[in-house]
Amino acid sequence: MSDQRTEETPYRVVLNDEEQYSIWWADRALPAGWHAEGTEGTREECLARITEIWTDLRPLSLRRRMDATAA
Image 1 (spheres, helix red, strand yellow):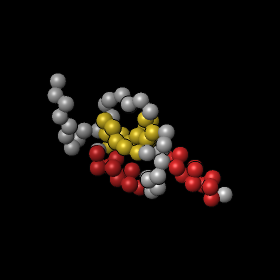
Image 2 (cartoon, rainbow, N blue to C red):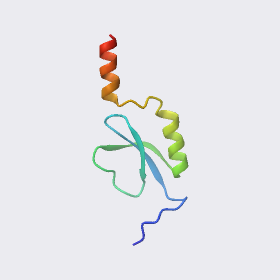
Image 3 (cartoon, rainbow, N blue to C red):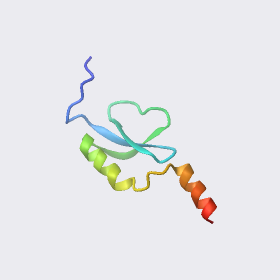
Image 4 (spheres, rainbow, N blue to C red):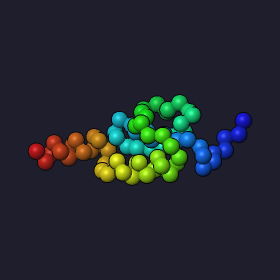
């Protein structure tokens, strides 16, 4: 079985509990700790979606800690 990916390979946008985003092959089970965001498409479409929604690259735990010290 070949594992070569092409431009037509479907991907999905995934995120972890720290709200960090990545892409994953749509035909494979998600790795532990990652959840589907809901977007599927080409690699470029998924990366564009991540660029659109992931505007604060700090992990969730850091954002919460910083918000708590600012309050």
